[in-house]
Length: 378
Image (cartoon, rainbow, N blue to C red; front, side):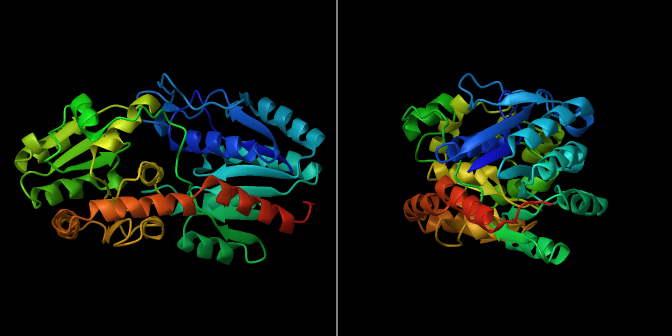
């Protein structure tokens, strides 16, 4: 099969850039892939972080044509002409924000001229905390596709209702792999990160700190867990860090919380996931979590909220615990249960089984199956 894939990759940072790079790597093990990426991304008002560039000394990389510019329609047309000339069997686009809609529309037109159907991988239909208007923009953009892969049952039902005659398949974010692994022991990892010794349980909150990720509910939950439990917050704050530090002080948690307010590069990730006893995802909204897939890759149990597809990835009582969102008491109860019932070891074993189920080959199998059922685009 000859595919064309569009999406971010190095030198850009973040989960979707990692996903796209790994997707192309695994597709290329079986198929021919033309990979088109960008040489710049979002305006500053859409990306409040310090930079969208990956600072990793050991980045994930894959050969790509990085000529697309979201502000220059001439680059869209050039790539669209290349798509029309190369006649791929499938054009695989990714959906996570309407920002890319004009560019994707131009590329989809090029694919249609070549008779190539468009397959969307939907990381999320709408962004967390978005306005109702974003779904209307999503419907407009996703009309370009002939088939879709979504990562939650709810979003599958939503797209099936919007496009009843098109294929909507339930897929998954595979466990993220390929990051440097130096074989750190938990003791070495904790020492490197300035954390308490191994007799102190450590819960990890990892990734960008944004309102929808629910950190404001995790901190009161920590205050209701045994006094020794520690929380490591690792990731760049997209909110006011000082507000959280005031909340930490008001809850009497200053000695029990460690904050690393920065983007964690690839070569540093291992220490965070090896040092922790469990990852906590107290999300208020969202679709799936790339951080959760990192935890599964590292064999780390997950305590998460009943939001989006989290409960479809984290099986309650098996490889993690599920609680209602925006409920600090329920979250605290899950954290106490995790410690009191010594759930870490059996949940780590279950995480290994989940990694096999949520694999890259399984996702590639699904893409192949969808391709086999697609008619040429008209």
